[in-house]
Image (cartoon, rainbow, N blue to C red; front, side):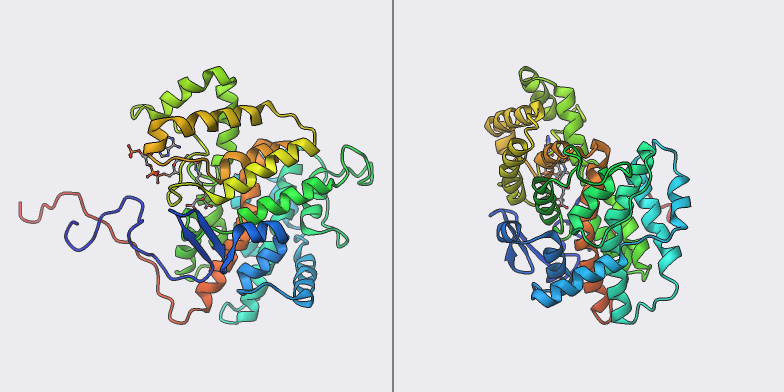
Length: 391
Ligand code: SDX
């Protein structure tokens, strides 16, 4: 304790807010969305059913869910003027740089006519972001490979649409065996999006809440969250895991990298390991690990990276440093393996996380905005500078 404040480098000891959306027990590896265990939701729901739950507090009945998904389809189109904005990026711009810019620019296309004091207008803003995120994401990818943009279709589900907007070619309908909408891929995407949809007050969600507390418009708040998610210590870890596995290369080089990760003077961290809250296991990693086997089997994408990942996990879990520091595989350790099997480019992995986490971010934004008397967030500091007043 120093004076008035306890100093905590990761703001862990002081609760920053109250929320009814997600509950985590880091010791027991428990994760609940609106009170429902993550493994049940992952087993039984689609991503949009979980998005409805996060935003509305309860699972929708058949009619409510159908209405919700119809409205998502209605909001999926992008303003045609946004094409110019997307085209303005160099072809090799990192898609996360594009996402931060394009989502922020939604403020200029969709916000002026809405009044954030009106709950219905707030709901429309949230629906717009959930609907447009995969469209923007796929457009970023298509821009990077110089392919024409593909519009969302009303006859496809949320995840089918995303795959279609990413990979379909105007020269062929979506029937080519290499390009058809593979149900294994759709199931895997729903699962990955559910597992990444929300996670209490993680860095990017806290960023969205802090920005929201100033009254900034929702698109700017979500763009701030996307910027925070990009960091390799956070959502950028899934891309970093694949680069790390590529650098390690072979199983016999694992011990060398485990030693590097333990060396305090070496900035190298074992990407995909450790967590600010989970100190025994990340329940999402357990679910994704199982899905990896299924996806790789069904897509027959025999992936040496997966074997290397399994070998690295086995080695690290036996290492006394990792046991003592309670470092276990987190959600990002395996997600990249599945995205790779679905032919998602590595630099799009954090964009995938962005699509999923938009459901959580907009839910937290709605929760905050509905709370009367919201006050501006204002973290304090421990001053360590000098004071020349009495010199
Ligand atoms: C996500 O908050 C969320 O909920 C995030 C997230 C979400 O859904 O929003 O779950 C998503 O961001 C998952 C995390 C993805 N990041 C990575 O996989 C990057 C690699 N992991 C590390 O950078 C790290 O583990 C963090 C950032 C995840 C957590 O950092 P902390 O809280 O500082 O870790 P810690 O306090 O548990 O560390 C304990 C010790 C430290 O050493 P000492 O200071 O005690 O000597 O373990 C060391 C750390 O240096 N350590 C690692 C390590 N992670 C922690 N050493 C080697 N490799 C690692 N990965």
